[in-house]
Structure formats: structure tokens, C-alpha cells
Image (cartoon, rainbow, N blue to C red):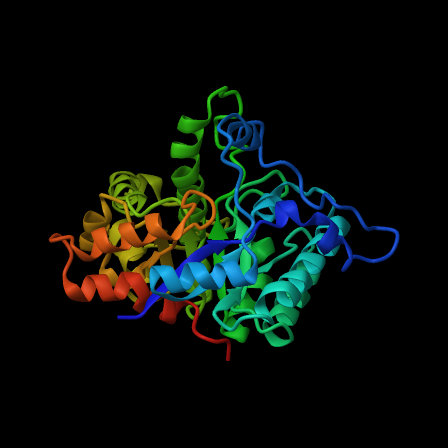
Length: 355
């Protein structure tokens, strides 16, 4: 069985000076991205659990010790890209980060794969950067934030459709990754754990439902989108809630009387969601210690769930990660086919090389 880590991380937060070297002269700043929110880094400082900063060699050691074939690297500080309000700065920061990622990690080790930060604040620049990242830097796709002040409403908004069209043409993956916890109803919280516990799945549910209900997957049937780092159990929960609300009185029409998108009249919202999962348009990340994974697989099918180590964030060492993988392999509520799919097969389908 090949195990693939669909969601690993690098600590760009500690490498601002390095990344700044790839910025235009006169715009070189060590701090490229805003703070996540008022909770994240205060929590890490208080608990003295600063995120590690593994080098390419240390990442390789982690992969060897865990038995993982290869990983896909996402940022740390760059997860707050959704909070950059200035489009020009978003373009500069994303280009610099992507070039640095390629030079420092991807060129050094073929087991380290990359996903680009996309400056969605400027849609034309976003298309060009996604194209550059895939065609010139060899990356597997692009990342969009699950929330942030710079998002125009939601990711189902037609302003972002040209980017989805480009991803479909390139045949590359797009991932909606959780990061900052602002604008999800918990900005006034003074404790980290409930904001972290609820903010991650809730922000993914908001964006997934927006893309489903506004017809993104109808218009771009070859698009592949993953929703990462919110666990798997929000999937059956959202299916149930959507079915309870989707009926004739709640169907949304445009000014011409046409359905905005999503399930057709008479179709269950959960069946429409399952169709996107089954046909390989939507993927969902999970942690190995996700107790509800079996329920999510039973409701949504095995073909869409992606194992992510989250190293070096929540998982700080190879021993812990390997223990969690072994526990999943020993579960009796998942079949062997389920385990092979969620631990590696699905990642191959999602991240398959661009055309």
C-alpha cells in the first residue's frame, strides 16, 4: 500500500528573509502575510509549542520513518493570504513564496510536492500565477483560503470562475485550506480551543456549500477541489443539514427564473453532494485519529477522503504520525479497500499531474 501525505506544511513564518529575496527591489519585507487572527500565535507561545521548521532533509527523514511515499507541502504563514487586502501585495507575496518553495524544497527532493499560493485578489494575476506554478515550477495546483477579509463574499462567487476555468484547462488541483479563524463568528472569543475546533470545519462547510449551491461544479465538471484540515465528520453533518433545508420553498432562482445551481428540483441536496464526491470533483482531508471517518466514508464513499499528516503543526514527530497511521490500519470499521483509498489512492486521483 502506498501512503501519500496530502497535507504537509513548511514553516514560511520563520523564513521571511529568505522569501523576501525573491521579491522586487523596494518591496522586500520579511513579513509577507498578516497574522492569522488574535488567537493562533498567542496560543502557540503560551504553550511553547512553536511550529517546527523542517528542512528538505528533515522532511525526507520524516517520510522515511513514517513510511509515507511523498508529501504535498502547504504554507504556514501563507495560510493567511485571505487577509491581504491590497491586490498588488498579494501578487508580489504569492509569487515570491511560490518561487522560494520551488527553489528551497521542490528542486531538492522529488518526494516533496508543491501547491502554489494564488493571489485571488487580482483574478487575472491569479490565473497567470497558477499557470506559471503548474507549467514552469511543476506544482500540482493552487491553494485558496477558506476565509479572510479579502474574499469577495464566498468562493462560489462568479468573480472566481475564470480561475476555476483555468484550473480545469490545466488539469490541476485546487485546495481550499483552513487558516485564519476570522469572520466565522468567533472573533470575540478569548480562548483558542473552541475557535480552532469549530472554525476549521465551519469555514470549509461555508465554502463547500457556496460552491455547490452556486453551480461551480455544474459549470466546471472537470474541476477538482479539496477541502483540507477540517476533519471528515462535517461531510455527513452537512449532508443532513442541507437535506433538511433544500425544498421548494428554499430553492433560489436568478432574475430570469433559472436555478442558481446545485441540486435540481426534486433531487436531494445530499445526493447532489455525493455525486460530486463520487465523480471526483470534491475531496476532503482528514486526520488519522478522526473517529468519525467510518461514518463519513459510509455516507460519502471512500473515493474522496485524503490523509494529511499536518506535520509539523499538530503532529510534531514521526513516531506520533506512524502510530496514528497504524491505528487507522487496525480499525475494524473500515475495509481494506477503504484504507488503501484514503491513505493513498485518493491522493493520486486528486493530485494527478496536470495535463
